[in-house]
Length: 216
Image (cartoon, rainbow, N blue to C red; front, side, top):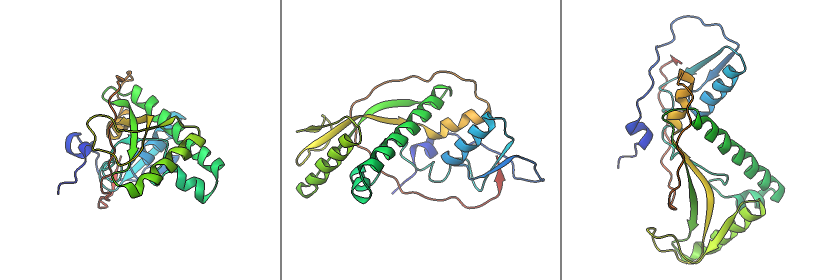
């Protein structure tokens, strides 16, 4: 089965030469995924001289194989965080993740080819044994300050649910690899915004690139 992500399959990879000489910098960032590139960008905007080192290609690891979905909840759910710690920690997690999503949206507005789309997040059970966990996650999100509502049916076009489903209209989707292009000198321009019908989200297998000692 081909597990190549849409970003890796369609986006042109940025090319940089191998590191040949000694470099002087204020900060050395190791790793050219979304975290490393964002850190390098923010430091450079503060006037620091930054060198970014990447073993393979920019955005070729976990970032390049992600779904591109951004949301304030987590893969294990906010209910898991609330039960492991407490509701105050769960609210803090949601608040910080919302701020991170807003930051990405702001960056996308300044990149000509970046696409940032607001669309709902829908969670529902395909098996009756999972129905309670759906309601539990919805309740945890509401307590954490999210507007997630319970419905009796999923939106048209999705497989039939067994029990209740919840819909949260704050999920975002963006092209993360294209967001990285700002560090290469792309001129600022507001990206288009649009809405879409609810869709399910999926996960792709994460992989790592082989070390090759490239500098960006």
